[in-house]
Image (tube, rainbow, N blue to C red):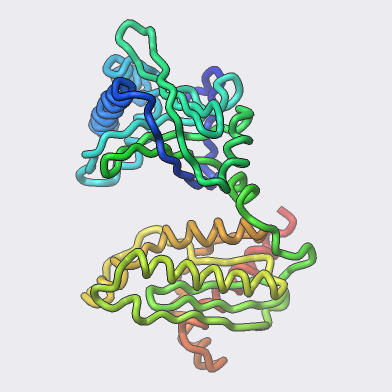
Length: 350
């Protein structure tokens, strides 16, 4: 996609996080206009999925979508959203939504759904005659996000915006760079002279952590177990909170013991297991979500987060466990730490 006026091409290597607020409309007419646009945008995304799967170029797809929604920026945003559904056999797009890609500079962070104050947002309503309309809405964020929102109001940081409808209520999602989130919501715990490496092995019923020094020697081992979480019928939300609490506890312990580098498994596709019990455990465990939270936790503490391929870790962990008298999960965490250390040494001067 070409860089347009005020447009900020999103860097693929950059990590993002989403904060949420509640939208309050000034009247029913404004709500109806936004809801109509949300439904229209949802239909545009569906069309974009079909077009992208055909032989049409992206430029042609954008041209066709713009004819339908009469707004080129919403068309570009729909294409971006549609790409997230391309690998799915059937896209489940039932709820209306409205999404706008971020753009900094004269567009003040976003072109179509723009924050104008810490408690106000403008939503652009496209019209067929080209005379688009702005709907001003109130939005409520948590108090801890207000300093962050104030920095977004400068217009120097691009942020993507989404309006969603859930259980009859409207919410405003702002997607921002992870480092900005960490800057305003986290405390700096990692010491300036910290140099140790911590490797993590995450499983549905436990999290294992091994801390090593620059020579690869084991400094400390810490494990958090929660076997009850994998039992049938255990509430997913409660299990999630327990895992996040355990992970936060381990990370806090690490930063207080001279750890600077936090090494986790790079998880791409989770393959189903032949064992029904194992599949149930996997289904209850959101790996990617936990990793995202791990990255936020680490960066909030000024630590260095890194993911390493876990290939052959389970195989290599068996003989290592026998040699050092470790269980295989702790051995896997140790291997992750060693691989992270080797990566750091190989890329020290690059």
